[in-house]
Length: 309
Image (cartoon, rainbow, N blue to C red; front, side, top):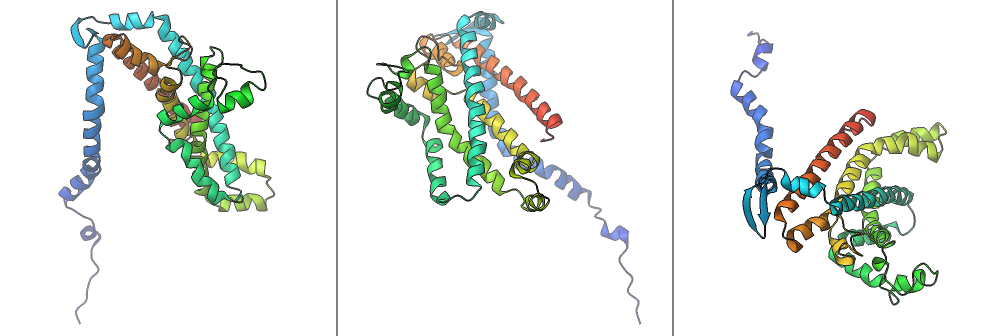
């Protein structure tokens, strides 16, 4: 009777070096089209913009090499620093409020409230609307004297009389922040709610069996498990709020005066109102550098303190 021997261990190990080389380069081949597209549509224009920022460029004509003159002119312009403070204040107020309201709304939805299936589709509406439409809607709602909110709330309580919120130097920026909160809080609610629904149920059941109260469950389980989602959404929303343009352009165009002139609006005016193409390019480079530093610091903090990435 013929004895059949078991296959040797050496025979079970692949020896084809070509297979290993293929598996090693396969992931890079998959992302190559995306990286090439990003290089063409993002990297090349950015490098060209950086080149323009080092030249005299006005009225669509690129002139002689200017070195860092455009950056010196930009950083010595009080209007630039005003726009930087406007953008920073907009982010510092709007994003934390949206974040907190988003978490509260998500917690409420996760309690299986009545009519939840009807409420959730309505939450998509503000974020689905084009920013231009959002601006037009709230320009009407907060119009002086006859606007719905202006007439029924601001004038009745003596906050502002006979004028639009967006015409007041003291209230215009806060009006823009209110509009941004109205537009993006539902997005935060839905995002956090989806994250909570994806969390495993077993740890929560175990915590309830051990006698943990809802506050302990939230801070000891929900928040730590949601941390990666919270960090990513917070970073994306911060970047998006910092470069907001559409609603500001429609509602105030940076006014009254320059009280609501964000960096994006200032960049538009440098380019299409003043035709200072070199200065506008320098502004774009500075904004990119600010975000590059901010994102790196944010990444390091989130990695070391929150163990997210």
